[in-house]
Amino acid sequence: MKNLLLSALLISAISGCNNPQKAETPEQENAGTVTANEKLVRQYFEHFNKHEFDKMAAMYTETAEFKDPSLGTETVKQTRAQTEKKYSEMAQMISDLKDEVVNVYPSGENHIVVEFVSTGTAPDKSTFRLPICTIFTIENGLISKDFTYYDNSQP
Image (cartoon, rainbow, N blue to C red; front, side, top):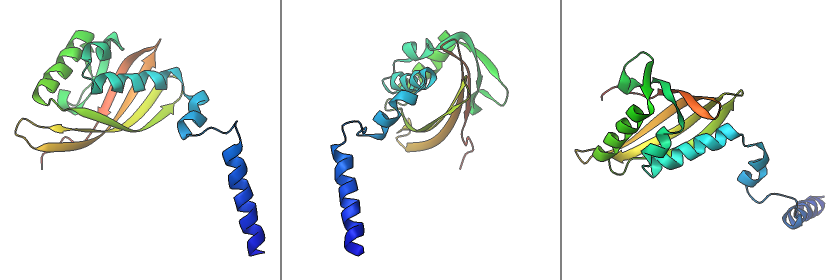
């Protein structure tokens, strides 16, 4: 019985490897299910990590709504120019600023939730690793709301 089970597993593994229709990676398997909004958000993080803040800011509506602990506790409206300026100034202080996307969670037709970790070296030479979650609202191919949550408390 044990040999029969081993043989079945081996045959299954071999046939899976030789099946040309089977995708080789999870990304390839899910390629058909990635929405335009997910692609937009992934492109957003590529621009962020390359510090292409002009291209990143262009992905927002002319004036978008933001919730961000760095901006206070209320929703704030900012223009593309203000968004570009904010991130450009941040990158001047933290030249190795980078976001690593942990997971992307589509939610309905207009929302994408992104879990990521921001890292870098602060001006005092200390390094940081900050888990962040952002809820993006996307309308007509542009980000209209960016609601970001992270622990902003001081140790």
